Length: 230
Ligand code: CDP
Image 1 (cartoon, rainbow, N blue to C red):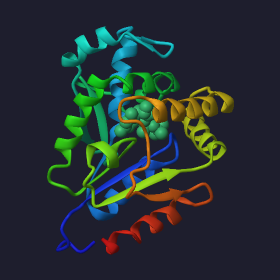
Image 2: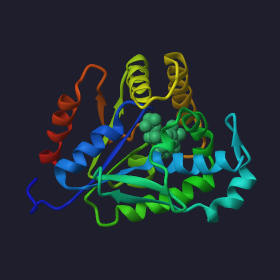
Image 3: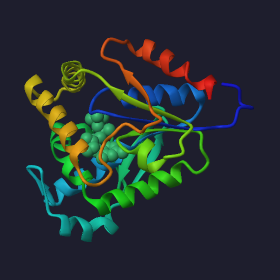
Image 4: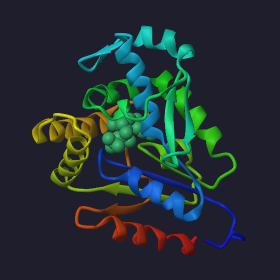
């Protein structure tokens, strides 16, 4: 991209497991922008809550979680080996652990707690102050950066999303069933769309991208084509 063109904020929201982070990461690399996976931050808080028995089987002890928030430090650090912005929790790299199905099965109720959202939205907002950022999540175009210059709302058919996530987790050696994954995806969508706090919804000015039948390359080209029109 022409470096003389001023940097913008790109917000990518959408349904579970539709490849938001993949597009966001590739876009950031092409534009030389910072990529922030806001879902990783909610997953980090969930991992803390699981380890400290604050959430179990999708039931959150809200009071205990609120009381512990000051002890939870979540941040990103560049991994020089992978060139990936890894997520850290209180001095520990938890990039791999946050993708476990157990975290996916507990993250939506944790992310519905208002105080958790306030904490993480403040951090996310600070990360975008200088622009030149691509952030993906559920409320980026509606709450975190309502002024973002480019907003994309991504989705894909549930079966396609479940198959992609199943392939991803089994490739990493996790033993999961396709049905378990599909059920988790559908349940998280329902939870995220119906919660009181910043529910998942398409911003009125977001461009819709359904990538059910698109390859990674096709979707990246599709998104890159939106950039010069700003
Ligand atoms: O699995 P996937 O990559 O689709 O999800 P994620 O982006 O890692 O987000 C995990 C969960 O965090 C979501 O299901 C939401 O409950 C929550 N989340 C949120 O509430 N707000 C965000 N900005 C990002 C994620």
